Image (cartoon, protein in one colour):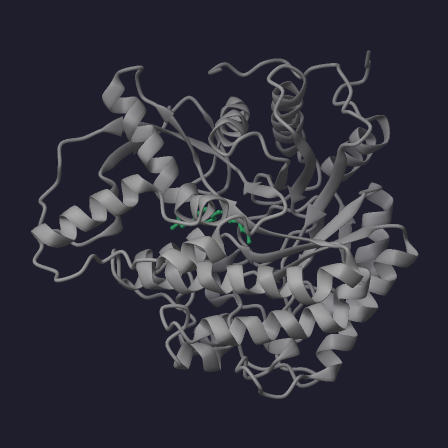
Length: 479
Ligand SMILES: O=S(=O)(O)CCCN1CCN(CCO[C@@H]2O[C@H](CO)[C@@H](O)[C@H](O)[C@H]2O)CC1
């Protein structure tokens, strides 16, 4: 499908659940209160204030650490079934290190938030890691250091033990692609390293093993009593073949495998996608490396990693066209040259406030179909989807975005038989948009960052989303 379609007037199935998401560093603030340790975003913002637009940082952010009851009241007004939020590793384990002290005040904060959600009939969907790595662990090398597997396993066990009685849906990592590729290759996210085609592959290797270990810890030690589910949230742009030539179709498929398959082929089938292994092994050999730049899983690791997911999750925002290109200079060591695909957009696609995000609703339907076909028709959660602007309460472009993207989700379900059972909007409120600071707004509630009270104000999109959830339909007159 390549055409925007008018929003369908059909209704969402009764089992379908609507949610909304935030993340710890983006909303909590209280960066050094009640025993919380420093994380890599605290450290980056404080030591290199030019990294983030306007020198913004998450010291206060939306102050959700103090205002979480207000946040739950907003969730109640929206009528969401669940709230997807993340835990701050260094609030719970200040040093991050396996065996290091646990900060009870950090545990108590999340217990209070989960209790408040429960009291309001809202299910918590908890992300264990959403990019805010304890700074001490970065001083040990971060995820490129294989020891991070043990440190993460210790953290996961602490949160399963302390919070698991009230949590059914867990996610180990949010967007490992951004963690490793933006963090250690493009340098556009903390810790801001530029080790393309090198450290980023080590980062992913440790992260995938850490995910699998946490999954097995839950499966063996906690699931019997807690009866919950564990997954990993991966993201990708939808890559639409620029033409129906074989070369362009292969280019699009290769891009999806290097972006989403990098992690999800591992948790589903136990290993990296074949196309990554083949291309990186070959190029590493041409470049004179004794071993491939892409680390290898052993046979027992493949068995251990295979199947470590109880649902398939996707954070999806936008689309690009993918086109085959001539092989680049084989001596270039980089992810981009390993991938070797040209991408471009259609300038007619509606813009957002984010340079990487064009509004292309039909791309989400194609992506959901690709996921279903590629991973054998699993249950799929859309765990993030949303659009940025520069502010304002009459956000009719955001309403239009949700109406058209949700319509494509519903068409994937009703017309294509894709088993999507959850949809999560990004985000509840305007928050710290990483290197873009507070300039790009994704919230359904506006936050006034010039007011120490960080007041929240509903935008028109909040009313629209509440109406969609109540009516289970996207337009005024439903069938
Ligand atoms: O600006 S640049 O072009 O130099 C680099 C930007 C790279 N983007 C950042 C967001 N990411 C996926 C979405 O990232 C997700 O979506 C939200 C909106 O971004 C974030 O706030 C969430 O934390 C994150 O989970 C796609 C890649």
